[in-house]
Length: 424
Image (cartoon, rainbow, N blue to C red; front, side, top):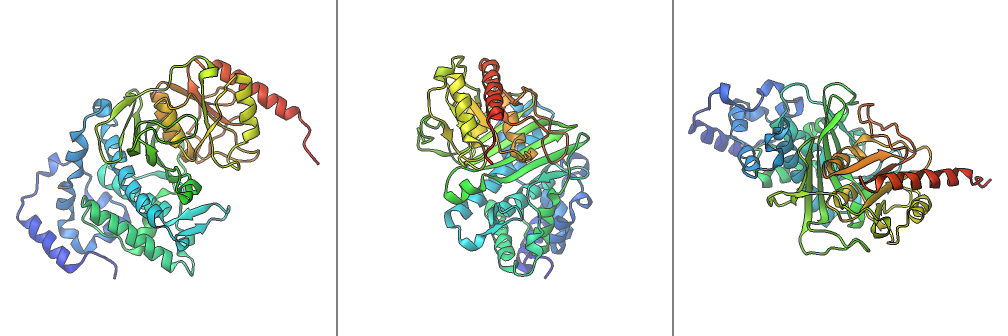
């Protein structure tokens, strides 16, 4: 059956809409139905007559604008509100899966990296919310996942599981009275196939950054950014397992009881954090230390993701005395932005190409919190070249006071490593 809206739900919806007059089209903030992507038109076909009126009554717009932030006067205020809604909804699905994850919920991609039903479900929900809330023309999203593996023989069970998870999450949220078919699910995933580039607007999404951490029950992030003419103009990081207050600099543990942080930043408006439950946002800033001895640094938990020997050498040259804080995902960017640590180091092994979705959201959160994010030569990250970052060796982030000495230590450590003969 193509559409999954039940007859009883259709009747209830039609009755509710009939009792309430439609608002004037000239005053509507939403684009016309014909601009919706195919999978949304497809999913709601049986309720099509009332769907435009339904979308005009979505409760999210009023809820999102009720919590004013510094970005409220920004030209990207609507996009930021939609991005926060999308990431929060995706985080809810991810939390459900992490609590109940089964081996059948995990697959391996061609590069042997894991992908879960939550990766797919998160990408679907983000695509749906952005299309419903802010898309007025063509929709472009650069995202990590595609539906190729789900269209293969033998994937029926996991596809059904993803479909159920997405529709259950939508039903619980109650902002969108639609259900997606399996074909709609596949189409929504593939809405993230854009190549990005220097022109126009492109959303950039990592539906679960840190999948290995997610599988361990550790840190992960839903990372969403917006590119406008090649520049990152907003970013949102949903970190369901990150303490809302701060993490202990020595072991990454919580210094408080509340867990689940939502970081956001808009260009020129600063960075904020709030709970995933929707507490009022609070301004954040990077730490102000100018003494490397008092600094601590973040790096990837997985040894396969960064050269721990090189980062250790950099820390030694800089005079850092604290051990590294190793956590998964762009949660490191969020923790750095609010001052939990002073430095972030990422140095993948030779041949690895950084993807823009692994850094776009985190980078703007740090820079809007007063920090700097560069490659190993001190160049700004360029997100306008497509799906990959072309950069020198690695990525570093810190405050403005420490950056000169950090760059010096980085370049000395890299030079020394390059002079060591490779084992035969």
